[in-house]
Image (tube, rainbow, N blue to C red; front, top):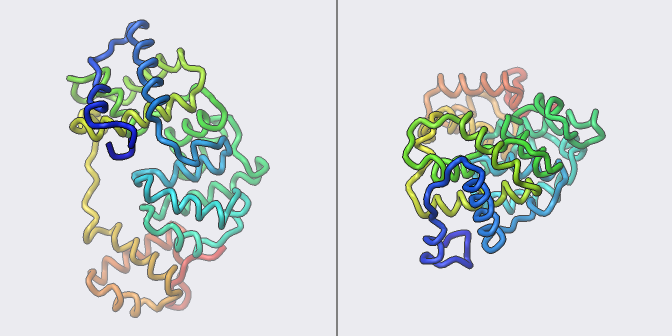
Length: 294
């Protein structure tokens, strides 16, 4: 099986279990099976071997909607270039965006750098206080929960795509429009019997990856499921190309940019440049655009 080299297809199918219920006996059985699966077949990644808040946050941001095979070399590169929050905060946005290529939304990189700057007041780390973590740019409820669980073994409620798939498959196999609130309550019940939150959530995620290969997508039964819009010829594509152009080859006059991106409408290019300026990615001076400097 892809990602699980020790599993044959026949063995993988043996991990498709009957539905579980919310009584304590069933919850205990579910915990035991998930942890036993992880003990035998859990995936090993270098970001799972640390409790350092910088390394955990870096991995969580990079892994958002991005395959682990693409993240691993970038993760190692970033730790070489910027090994700490302090190093990332001091680095240039230009270099950050250049090396972020291939990891999806550039806004994540910008927010990661902003968060790094904010950690200076905490001694270049992230505390174990949810109220302090919440204002970090781009750190939503799920990422905050991951930081608390993976760095500090807190019984946080970490609901992400693979974990959602597991809960929908195992506890709500026939229900439509399941709300995240229901799944979060279930995670709270399950956490009551868990001592190692870090391994617990990694186990749930890995089982979710296996289910993705074995079954149709259960996440479509989530009340919050949305299909990502097409990338081709979208404003996301234009924004990405603008950032790559300016970070790869330096400052450009607007007419030059429009000529280089001639496959797109001029008005859309202008609108995207304005958005990137407003969001802090790009600066304009006397008609010349460049990646923003501090």
